[in-house]
Amino acid sequence: MRIAQEAGFEGIELEVGDGPAAALRQAADAAGIIIHSVHCWENYRKPLTSPEPAVRDAGIAATLAALEAAHVMGAGAMLLIPGVVGADASYDEVDRRSRDVIVRAILPEAERLGIVLVVENVWNGFLLSPCDCARYIESFASPGVRLCLDLGNVIFGRPEGWLDIAGRCAASLHLKDLRHWLHLRRYQIVRVGEGDIDWPAVRAALTRIGFSGWGVMAEAESAQPNWSKRAFSWTRRLSARLGWNPPLAAAERRLSRHYVDDAMRRFRRYVVPSPAGSN
Image 1 (cartoon, rainbow, N blue to C red):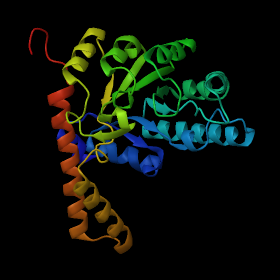
Image 2: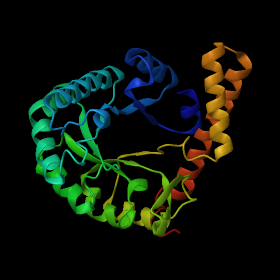
Image 3: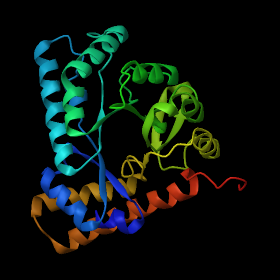
Image 4: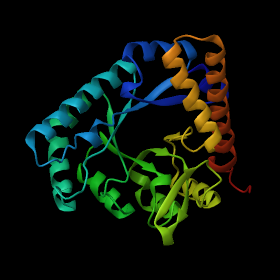
C-alpha cells in the first residue's frame, strides 16, 4: 500500500482473497490510499449463469460474500463476471440468466451497501463488442451497474473504438497492453507501451468522451519480463517456505517497488490525456 501511494497512485484494486478485509482497510488507511474496487474470481469458477442450480447458488453466495468484504474495505465498486459462455450455456442463455440473477439476487444487496457492480469484458465468450457492452449495461437502467472496460482484453476492433461506443457506460478502465499474433491466434500481455495498442488514439478517445473514472494499471506483475516474474515468484515461494526472512522480504519489496514505479511511469507516458492543444 505504501509503495503504491509513494509512486503516486491514489487508489488500489484488490482481490477478495488478498487478506482479511478489515486488515486491508486498516493498511490502506495507514498508507493514505483508497481501496476503490474489489474483484472476486469465484464468478469465473462458479458462474452465475450455470445451468446447475447448485453451482449458480454457490456463485451467488460467493458474490454476496465479496460484496460484504468490499463494504468492509470501503470500496465503492466490485468487479463482476456476469457469466461464462460454453457448451453448457449459450450466449443468449448467459445474457438472460445473468440479468435475471443480478437483478434478483445481487443488485439489491449491492445497492444496500452502496457498492456499484462493475461488469468487466473478459475472455468469457460474452460481451464481444462495444455495442454488446453498452446494450447490456444500459438494459439494467440502474446507476448501480456499470462497465469496467479492459483495453487489453479487446481482441476484435480497436480499444479507442470501444471507448467511443461503450465509454459512456464505463466507471473504470483496466489498462494493460497486448501483443497480437492474429495469424497464430496467440496473444501476450505486455507492459503498457510495448504492445499493439495505439495509446495516442486511446488518449484522444478518453478526451472525446470526457472519461473521469478510475484507471487501473492491471496485471503489472504478469506483464513484466520473464526474468522479473520468475524472480518475484521465487522470492514469494521461498518466503512461504522459510517464514519471515529479512533479505527475502527486502528483495520482494524491491521487486514490488519496481513493478509499481514502472506502472506509474507508463501510465503518465502513455495513458494520461494531454491538455487540449498539446501533443
